[in-house]
Image 1 (cartoon, helix red, strand yellow):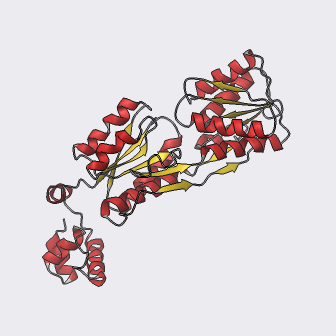
Image 2: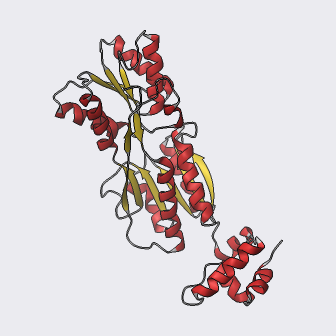
Image 3: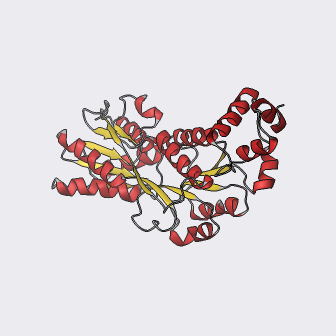
Length: 331
């Protein structure tokens, strides 16, 4: 196994200089040419630093936590993949923690950082407000929050990368209306992106002078979509189009419609949210909103790493991530 001494010998530099480069202590001390020499020697030798020794010297674990609400939801694996790729490229490890979208578990995982077990956090914190993040801010622990745009609420505290769920839901509803649908219903689970996506739907319905029809259920799951769709028809709604607040619910909706003897999209058109892998595989393929999860994970991870390395030390960022309506055969 290669050592720092081997790196120094191959690069023709002192071991002290190599140590400065490998520990990122280069500002004003080591030239770019020297850094490149060390990095080339590291690659040629396949050198791997001793993480434990480095952690003891620097009080850094070189590990970050990615916080997600539901590890079984197909939305999250591609996002986690984006986080892992960006972190590994920067020499960081990632641990994935699941909160079940519960406030106490979101707070519980703050302890990972406060105990020095991770250097920073990124992910979804649906139930926390600015006061909850205060202790991390005071300790200088960087956080990148994903999810909805909270305006200036977090602007003085933590970085926030968001998708405009209101606009996305409004655009998707308008998309269905332009196809001639005048009776458009929405189904959604509780919590998470529910409020924004429902509000976007309501905005489009109001702007087009139509009558809203919303059915809420407990969970953003296939079963939730099945139950909500059955409830719509049981209560007398007869939509020609249904928008589900995520793709799992949309797939459950499609199953319920078939159970009712209805054809998709001939009798009822269906659209979802998130563009999970299964959305292109179901029959008919699902019209949905692509949120570019893997790119989102990469953007968040790179921003967190920039905070950790000091490359980014300006005021907290509010950054909007793009979305795109994907037209398929269900609508």
